[in-house]
Image 1 (cartoon, rainbow, N blue to C red):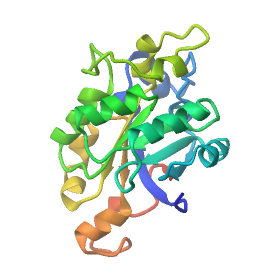
Image 2 (image 1 turned 90 degrees about the horizontal axis):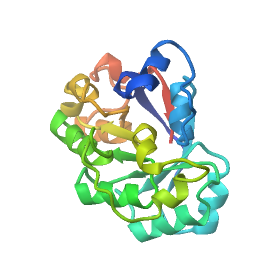
Image 3 (image 1 turned 30 degrees about the horizontal axis):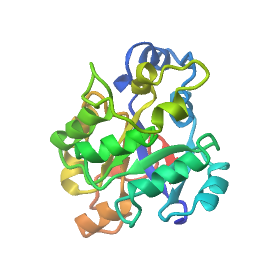
Amino acid sequence: MRSPSILAFWFLADALPGATAHAQRQGQVATPKLYNTAKQKLLEGKQVFSFTQSRMDIAGYCESAKHYDYTWFEMQHSTLEFKDVEAMIAGCPHAGAVPMIRLPDAQEWHIQHATDIGALGVIIPTVDDVDRAREAVKWARYPPVARRSAGAGQAASIWGIHGINYRQTFNDNMLVVIMIETPTGAANAYDIASVPGVDVVIIGNNDLSSFSNLEPQSSALPAELHPPWRGQMSV
C-alpha cells in the first residue's frame, strides 16, 4: 500500500444521468442514495479518501477497507491479476471502501472484467484525447447509454441485494475516472471532461511532471494545474 497523496480532481455532476445531475445542480442530496457510497459523497460535495492495494492480501485488504471511502486497486503498475482482485472483493464485499480499479488502458475486456468482478469504478490512465475517454465510457455502462455486455460474475450477487436490481441500477452507481498525465492531455482537458459519461477527471501529478520534464510546482506549468484545485481526492 503506497502512502496517500493528493490529486486534483473535477467531479462532473452534469455527466450524471437524469435526476442525479438535477439534484446536484439544485444543491440537494441525490435520492435514493447510491450503493456506490464514494460517488454519493462526491454528489454531496464531500471529500473522499482511498488506499492503494497493489498486492494479493485478503486479510490486509479487508482491514484497510474498513477505514476508507474507496479502494484503488492498482493494475497498471503491479502484478495483480483479475482473479486476485476478485478474491479480495469477495473476501469482504461490504467492508466499507468501494472497489475501484486502475486499469492499464481502456480496452473492452479489461473494463468488462473489472465490472464483472464487482468494481464500481474504473480509473483510466494517461488519457490524451477524447477518443480514449470515449473508449473508456463505451464499455463502462450497460445499454442504452453504453455497450457493457451482460456477462457472468460476482458483481450482481454483491450489489444486487436487499431488493436492488443490479442491472437497472449499475449505470448510476458507476464511476468513470479519467487521468490527465501529459501536456497533450492537459491541453485537451476541457474536451476530455466534456465527454458524456466521464464522471471524474484527475491529474496524475507525477507522470505529468515526468512527461513535461518539469517539477510539479514549476511556473512553466499552466496555472490551472497548480493548487488550490476545485476539489481533492486522497489516493
